[in-house]
Length: 298
View 1 (cartoon, one colour):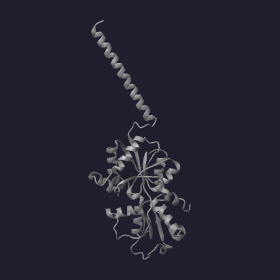
View 2 (tube, rainbow, N blue to C red):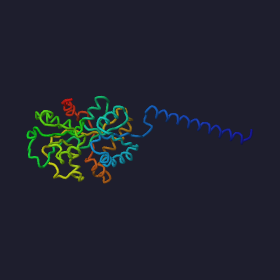
View 3 (tube, one colour):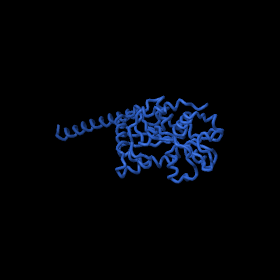
View 4 (cartoon, rainbow, N blue to C red):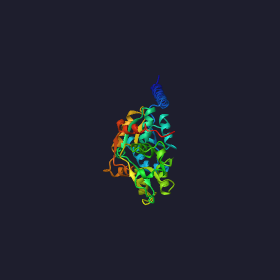
């Protein structure tokens, strides 16, 4: 046997070993994908459709780009057609994480083990404004008896659940008190209905109302704030309970690292109306669980 023969045999052996390793690794990767394990670093993010898709993309795009860089993942944005669809997509695991309103989070937790991850600093101190037309001379809620009223979306925390709760606290049953009760489907629409005198009074998310004025979509003289509710907890980012823990921790750390002291973070926080993010807790939503027991007539 020549040295050349041994050399060729050695190369064949090394090639065979490397080939087997490639096959094994490829098979293992395929298995992790099929079994839903964390090999693909992809996060399917659903956002509560409380504004138009264009406004939502504008608000959340800076955050998504930041999370992709900081947490080392790829984010797929999902904007459902309505609130119920967001809950359905989460409960059927079509999305991994969702930006819920408080009530849709409480609803989802009834059916899943959704984990509250983070919330904006403002989400612990949310409110609803009751808007009327400047020409309407009514000065308090009791003056609107027999007039037309609108909530926002039926599953909206700030557009329905909490305003109904606060009306209930004042012994007002909307369906009996007002001449008509509507559901506009969105805060923007409710504000425009008030502006256009299609309704006499409307309940609107205070943060969205302020943004509409700031962005020029609504003139401050178009409507009048009759009353602003006490504070309550609202929005939250929640994640599937079985989502990869290392990725979940990286996401949490990335959210909590956002600070207005860093110039690059200011655009992200400003777009979301926040100064920082806080860890979210289940107990933050007790008032919503209480409010959810006050049912609208079927």
